[in-house]
Image (cartoon, rainbow, N blue to C red; front, side, top):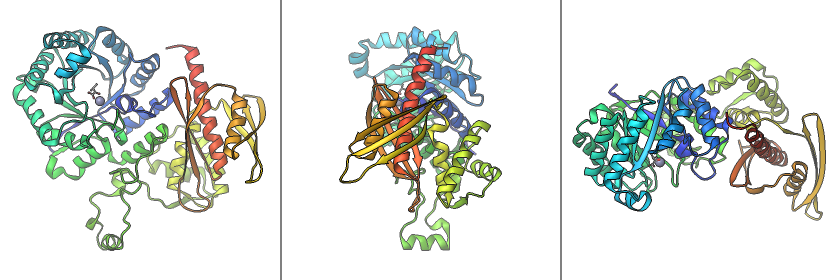
Length: 510
Ligand code: KIV
Ligand code: ZN
């Protein structure tokens, strides 16, 4: 019905740029696969020239994704464009996405270039990219604070040079919905060849208007919108993909536009991102927050019982939200387990399924009722994805309020079994100190958080630790009905990521 809006996901580029959201190669590949399942149109896989790691992940994503366009970001410079092309040329549908600022402020202080130079460089670099790739996106960075006539001139010129998508970013989240609507209208009316390119928008959320500005742009005629899962991104983040998509879906009467996203994959995708990054979604976050579909007040509950539409404008099922119901127990078989995972939107390969089933059996022994939330947490455990260089064999803790806590931890590394004892300020500190002795590498503990997955005395505790080595942050996750075990597992998970990355670095770029 109506126009089809293209959804451009930049979780792996703008999203990954936000503090504490960095991901390793395996995690990025997993996110890309999930974005393909979600059916976004474009996956911005990264910024190929930013680092060898970025290059490898963009290249890896370009290779595995078949059903979406794969883009790499590049500055409007030959070396960036060449590197971007090198990374994405294996994609089924590659796109080079280049940017150059057009606001007076950015041109004078950041680029130190005149208007004429910016116009000339933008045009020349689109031509340069066009010799490699037919699909070229040009972003006029800080467009919303640019002089409109200069912006129109640049856009017209890059379209003439071969740009197929022109992106109008609100880079610093400064615009307001009415103003942004007029800007997009202005582009459509004043860029004489605008009908030869898709008009895209990219809105940051500094004033909390990222989604509102994106929707205003759609109403003004934008064809493509750039968003991130959970709204992660630079500073206050980007327009949240799940919010934009559910607005289109729920208010078809207003937007008269649709997109090809499978809305049932929104919740699993959101959970995957928060699980990988360790950045939790606020409970009252629209669409994917824990309370987004919770009805607490008696009046609301009464209305809901009479007719769900009284207080529900979209169903939890439509965004793929699993009901927190008792689903499986210790007698459940592998088929039932696999079935339930499928209906929750998870597609695991055989190896992942074997590991997950083993974990599920252990959990079912310790916890009477295994709910959908438990299963989600279990599937998101990073141990399932990170090579287990070190594995926990066992630990013993001696602790109390009148004695110094002591921990003995035994780990397995391939066939070798190693054990250490340490004391500390409490049981978790003692266990972490024993682990430090065992792995013998330098890093610091930057963050530790513990939360319960479900209610009840036998609820699983989920621990997230962030370890810092050099300038990189490694997120580890551990899950157990015992919080000390969850902490030890989370620490080992993060250590395994550090070791895995240094092994990959030694292996070199491919
Ligand atoms: O915010 C911005 O302007 C960007 C561009 C590179 C598209 O992220
Ligand atoms: Zn941005």
